[in-house]
Image (cartoon, rainbow, N blue to C red; front, side, top):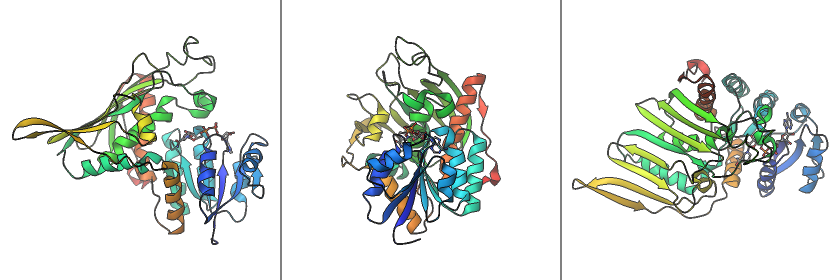
Length: 365
Ligand SMILES: NC(=O)c1ccc[n+]([C@@H]2O[C@H](COP(=O)([O-])OP(=O)(O)OC[C@H]3O[C@@H](n4cnc5c(N)ncnc54)[C@H](O)[C@@H]3O)[C@@H](O)[C@H]2O)c1
């Protein structure tokens, strides 16, 4: 590896531009290539950012074979996450992959196997992990102030907010709101309480808004979920109550709530309903600790850091530093595989209308 870390971008759609901007803000990083299966798209995006010397490819395989690349950002839609990640790892490249990890558990296992075989870093891009408020909430819970945790409510919602483009196409995105926003809310909960193993999932999904031309102009193309709820049993007798909507006739369908035997924590946003949005832009509404003092119920509002951190830049910088300093993946597959297992079980549970048992092979790590 030279002085500068040499980066390739796989998939040059919307989010890739955020990766490119972040990499360009670092002196010790150089973007040397881009690939997109839409002919001419990689060149167009590279040129837009003044990267005229960077090579462009119309497939990820050729980019991975190019000499002199150290790492890639994989910014394809979800259905191409696994193949691009496995090919990049097999080519000896470190990988920063956009969320969600992939589509199926078989893909997830193959990705972890390729990661182990390659000895390279595979980090998954959940940038809210760098949000000062999310960090603070995790600190409160880790301090033990809540006692034994037994319930977590997580999710988020938009009254009207179905995206377009590849997000509503099952062949490309695989999931709707579940894979777009649901995986964030699951990561917020799992990361806050320390990644307990998921055991069972009972879920419901629907598509009443996306499929209805009255509410969504591309309803004919809509082939994913727009609403989902699930009850997820976790080890240590913890239950997760998950709710997510891209659209509904309600202002919000959940807060972020954690119940413990000594105290409860509520993060709520009365003036700005979509909790996930507050997570992304780093501005939670209020956080309340509900506990007893001298046997009387007391509610304490906890002040949160209001500093604005560019979470994308922080995520990408942490990945770069991990590669340069030979550190483990900042957001490792051993944590995110639980997220993927929950998503996978939610989809199957909703389809089969029954509870799904999660079984992750013990030899995977
Ligand atoms: N972290 C975040 O906040 C955030 C925000 C938006 C999207 N995302 C994630 O980023 C990913 C991409 O989202 P987007 O909005 O940029 O989608 P997009 O559809 O705009 O872009 C994806 C691009 O990947 C290309 N592509 C597909 N398969 C490819 C392959 N094998 N090789 C090379 N290129 C390939 C497509 O042609 C397309 O141009 C999704 O997984 C999404 O969940 C994350």
